[in-house]
Image 1 (cartoon, rainbow, N blue to C red):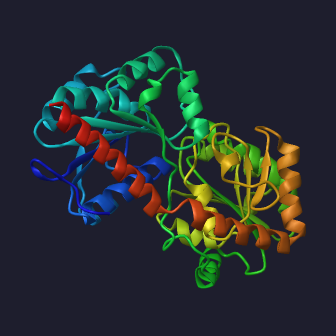
Image 2: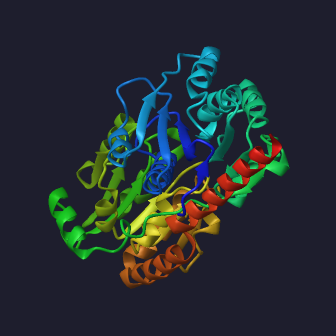
Length: 380
């Protein structure tokens, strides 16, 4: 990334997030912020969540990115946008908000501070009513509104979230140095988890929440786990206890590994034979190309932009939302035919290398930043 400068020197950017917990949008922001910092920019990550900070706060700091917290009070916190805007004035050239809560407070704050604002919509964000109305108003204040897939952009159009002239599509990208096949990591991770080298292992990564619908995946895979199957649920969230109870109800608790939020996702992906996702709603989840880059076949519900990433029968399989029987059948096909899984994984890695690199994503955002800052400079 070439260096950009503002009238104050290096470009000063604030990434605004609802939290710094481990998640897809947070990791995209971390990647962008880290690379921007390495290019000589002044970069800050601003969290709206209460203390203690999330797991990724230390990773932002390790990259040299400043971390700030402005805690959002319960309900609609009108004063928050004012507090953040007054703090931002004179400190930044551009604010980059990620997902609805950050947009709702970050865009008005940027307007108050009279600085540019880019927003990224990482998922469908289906909530309506007053929240949708508020976000539509906030959408009027941004200079650009980025969707992570064409399908996510179409959701924004249908919900009138932003003017068409401001809407852009920039697909998420991944660090191919971190996500790649690693036989040594596969063996070491399986040994640490007490899983045999020859076992059949399926895994998923994501917040344990209703929209991720991990209960569907558990029900679908339960009959396939004997005699040598295991499933890894990587992530934390409010449904952890209910998923543990479901594993007991299905009598597969010995083969279900609830690992919580983990910083070693690349190693855990290497321990898998199949990556599965059973979400009810998504944008373009970063973990899909990450799994593909690791050389894994993917079985997923066909939601959001996933159908543009997973090629049916070549890099994995897609199933309708909520179709437990078909999800089980696709997983079973890969369990029976391990060579099919390896072939899908190899094609998936090639696709991830060609289409979903972090360098491409960083370059696309830099070009967008440059256009916006130039337009603002000319308009003054």
